[in-house]
Each structure stands twice: as C-alpha cells, then as structure tokens.
Image (cartoon, rainbow, N blue to C red; front, side, top):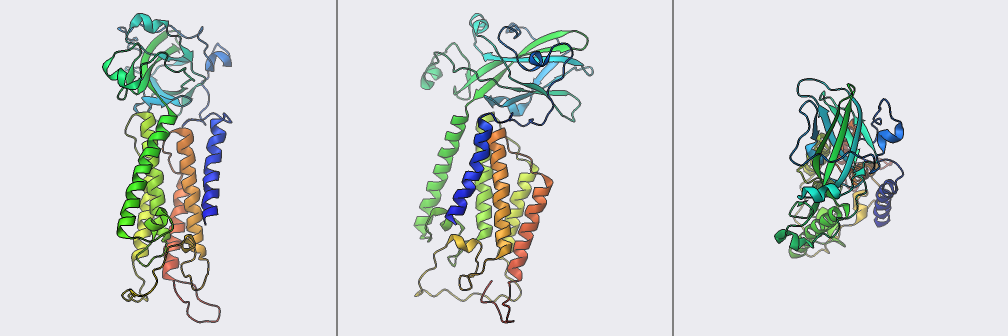
Length: 394
C-alpha cells in the first residue's frame, strides 16, 4: 500500500513540474482566446518591451472617468507567472477596446525615484469570458527582478525604504500600468498597485502549518495510546483497530482543501471563496463516513472487547480488504479509493498550477457520489461465498 501511495505522489508532482517548466501557459484563464487588436501585429498585442511601455501617470493624477480599470479583488496579490485579472468599463455605458498594454515595475513612495524604475511588459494579455457585462482581461505578471537594496525584513518595520511593502512588510508592491486604446482612438493610461508574492514563501507557510498539525495530532495519538505504524494509520483507525476507508477519505479531503486554502490565501493576500464543487465533495465524504457508522439491520451489536486479546494494529490493506480472515479485496472499496485519489490529484494539480482552488466539474461530482454510494451499499450487502454459505464478515 505504501508503494501505491508513493506512486500517487509522483503522479501528482509530475504535471506541476511540467507546467512550471513552461510546457504551456498557466493560469486560471489558460483556455481564453488572446486579445485581438486592430492595427498592431501579434508581437505588439502580447509583448511589451521597456521601450514600448507607457509612462507612469503622476501619483496624484487619476485616469479619465470615461474609462475605469478595476482589479479583481481575488488577484490583489499574485506571484510571478500568474495572472492579474482586471475589468475595463465605462460608468455610463460600454467601452470598445482596440488594444491593451500592461507593464509592471516596483513601486516607490518617492515619485522621482519611482519614475526611474524601469517597467517590464506583461508576457501575455488576453480577454477573459465573463457574464458581468464588463470587459475583463488577464495580464501575466512578468519575472520581475528582486527588489534591489531592500532592507532586511525586521528593519523595514522601523525604517522607511525606497520601495513599498505590504502584508507586514513582507510582500513588495509593484505598479501595474495599463494603457487602454479605445475603438474611438482615445488612449488612457492608468496605474494601480499589485502585491507580488513568492511561491516559495507560500510553500514554506504550508509546510510549517502542516508540521504543526502533524505534531499536534501525533502527541494526541501517543497520549491516547492509539496503535498504528504511522500517524495517518492511527488517525484513520477505528476503535477495533482497523483502518477505515471513509475516515481516510475525510482526512484526505480535509488536508487537501485546508492546505490548498492556506497556499492560495498566502499568494492572493485575501480570504478566498471555496468553490461549490469542493464543498460538495466534502459533503459527500462526510455523508459516507456517517452512513458507514450506521449498523445494518442484520448486524449484531459487538461484544465488549476482550482485554486479554492481542490488540489489532491497523494496516493499509484494511482500506480494500475489510475482513482479514478471508483476504478478499472489496472492489467497491477499491473503486472509491481510486476515484478519491484521482479527484484529489486533480484538485492538487490545479491549485499548484493555477494558484486557486478549482471548480470541480459536474461529472467528477457524479463520479464521487456514485463511488461513495456503492461503497456504503457494499457495507450493507457483503459478498457471499460461492458454496452458498455465509461470509465470515463485512
């Protein structure tokens, strides 16, 4: 069973490594069509060199109110290589857009010093489908250089530097300069600020939180004397010493959703909304765990435990072999375990690549509902031997 779990981890890690190496454009809008413009070529539409970036508007000057550029609240902070989403709208009506250029550069409270910082063009700007009626775009944050000559973190708290930081002085702030050319020929340049987070820091936060949870659960399990070869087996074991598949599913989804939420919130700097599909998955897992505890009509109440007997130690094989005396693999359990791991891998890969908790497709939800329903039904209707006898257990 350990080899199966190790193989699962390798399968989860490989797609994210491929995406990080630049195999394809990543981000929540990877399937959106690129921004189409009129005059310029494709190079002018997508790439902007420092020479073609617009000048920063003065700090105390805003853009004309006829064209408004508004950041998506979920992308106020973004790591390098991810997309900042924003809308372009007209308060009094719609606005026709011919071209959009987006550039990024470190922000500074000193206007003169700020203007000297070179802007770097976004490697891709594209339209995003939306039902809100406003024109929405996604701009990929370029690979900005590290903030030069920035003070060590504790010194930033007491000393003002040449650059702006947010999030307890840990996240550097970049100017996001957006140049909008309307179909009427009007060119509007506006600037807003975006925090640039670090994936390494987010991973470190997840590791620290995960280690604290692991140590806490380990101390509780040791204090209560729960048996098991490792902590996970202790957590998912039942009172009679067997590993429970339904409890394994709940623990898996709790870890996947919880750690993913911490990872995404660290990168976005905002409380995120967990997708409806993810909540449904948690509900399906919880319902299956509760249904598994309901005794069937023909099941007898278990006798008091024999204190002189050798305690049973949970094993990974208990997840698919409920009765150790028969050594029969329960295919309903195998199906539920396989689909649970596949769906969890899908969520993890999307979180690592897109930096957000994904929306779960409806067919995945149906698949998980069917597999959990079959598992619960299989507990009520245990398999029977071919000779017509009674099975040793369920």
